[in-house]
Image (cartoon, rainbow, N blue to C red; front, top):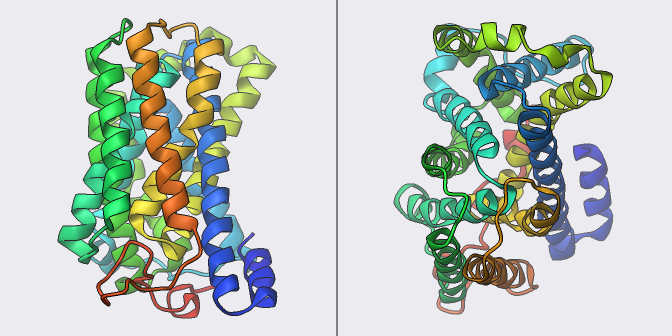
Length: 340
């Protein structure tokens, strides 16, 4: 995927090539995020699989196995294991694990439209973290679009007839972790000399044992073992697809963050929720319609569309006064940070 994108971009040349890399990586992430949300919802709600923690273990395992085999075959490259690696990429493994687990928990507890709306709070958190950690100051138009998204989400939440406190808590924790993941991923890609594959592999590897221990302590391993649906080929297919999609989603997040800002990556993840929102209204059994809730969801979606226009329209690389904008690339050329 990366080789194809780079080849096509090189053929376009100059600014157009850079813009193509930005757009194609964002589209790849949006599609991956949409598919995994739908598949996860089917596994956890439609099939009533009892543990989102066990599903997260499956996604961790898939990432480790795929990257280990790919390295053995010479398809990808990343540094060999050493005790120093944990220090170099900290706190990414903790953020990565928490983001995955609480995200799955929110998916299980909430309807798809409300999950999509509440996930937009991560945009505001990302914008504040980018300012504090990376020094990025968003433009006025970006601020307006973020206010619209957050305001719409709040309006929808006020009249959420299927309110679930645990679900709301899980999603807000996921929002904070998503913001931290995007910003620190951008920073570690530049400084940790891991490459995107190294970050993906060691994030999963270092968190595997703590995740197994935590899942066992809360009794979810036993609940998953006793689940009666393991003999259903359709469920098993979707469960395995969810595990593999966890790896693909992580790769797409890193790729999008590499070619765009962390705020853009977060926004694209929320943009795919436009489809999730409308599809969820019709296919989700746990969504309860109300006019105030629907109006809030649509205001939030309008803010997402506004940001998309502002971010990807073609303009000069810097603002007129020379200040840093949300469109400026903070990373060096990909050859310096990509070990492949």
